[in-house]
Image 1 (cartoon, rainbow, N blue to C red):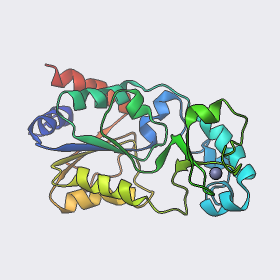
Image 2 (image 1 turned 180 degrees about the vertical axis):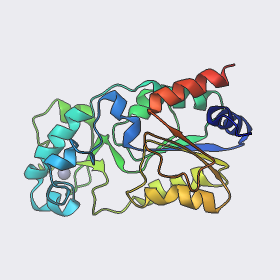
Image 3 (image 1 turned 135 degrees about the vertical axis):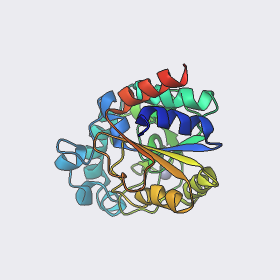
Length: 244
Ligand code: ZN
């Protein structure tokens, strides 16, 4: 007899000593943030090579800030019930932490504490010239592009551009979180962008189990369970079953 996939997921969540979530754009689409890589996404309007690289930023920061200004508006959203459900799992001791590829900080807004922002975030900004750091509030109360108060250079958000490596401390935190992980909950990511895309396969190879939540599952070959559907709908149902 085949077990109901939701019942199986609940049982896996309850039994796993250490569960970690890996999230991507699909968990934020229901908050109104379109997938940047999708048909109407940011990268269909702004070519990622021209606007999404550190090289482009260093050559012409004013031009890259035309994209960043749009990005800042796009990510000014509220967490959805899926984000809230992951925060609830952490509070219940069923989730050790989240590795997110999103730069929208919605997991933290929903109440999640242990969040590794794999591609950085728009909450902080740095001056590449003098190393001064600024927060989003500073950027919002000044005209764009924001300039460093110390040296007047244009500030860069602390997001990882396409031609940048994932910062060492972020990789270290990711490694710690994935150390001896028993269960990886992969949600809203089509696992296309490396190196994050390799995480489910690395976990699977080292004996961890995979649960996938995607509108169109892509990890069927390695996942114990693939739940096809909207992130928040699936998470609400799981939280309901866990409460029974
Ligand atoms: Zn500066």
